[in-house]
Image (cartoon, rainbow, N blue to C red; front, side, top):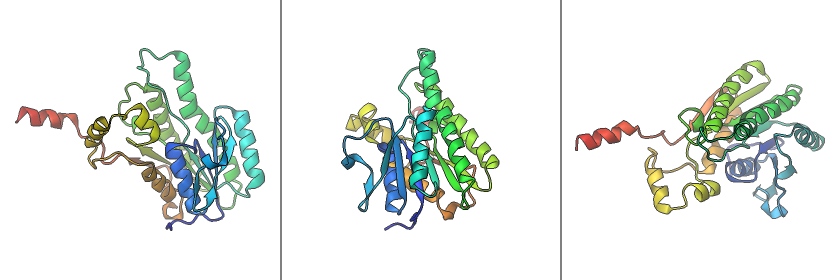
Length: 262
């Protein structure tokens, strides 16, 4: 049972098969929406699709960096769904590489995936939403990396910072029909993050202790924020960025000060 009702609405979640994107897809399914997800890898079977309460998402194979694939995806959604009410721009990411060592090709690839591609998709979906009586909501998944130093992922942090500026601009340009908002997670515990960064339970505990709330976010924490932002409860919210970081990071100087005074 959910307090949000998206019955009759259509939601597109990019990168909606894994991690945060999957949790978002399942949350909207649980709330009654018809959910489309896209990704570059076709699932081996329907059993892998996001599902909730006996309902499952529709999958389209599409690389959001390829505009021909994006246009084909949107044409298929338009054929099958009378409206496109919510778009969650979730697909993204970056390998670890210090800025001095990152190749020009890597920098361009990261910025294209995390900034250029979602903006181009937003342009196309906005064009449809502007023609709908009910407009729509464009929701960008940002990152705390846009708001603090991002060593090892400088291009990613810069791209996400660009997204936050774009959110504020698009909220002005596309109003009043389309609301544009962002959600910026801090540390989130997903299967990928556990494999890449927190494989050691002790390391995970130490990382969690740096967060004031004492834990990493779950993907469901981010999904809940998306349900709210896309709902009538947030009908006057546009151009905003919600930071979900458990209270932020404990300032390093506090640790130094406690040592010096012990």
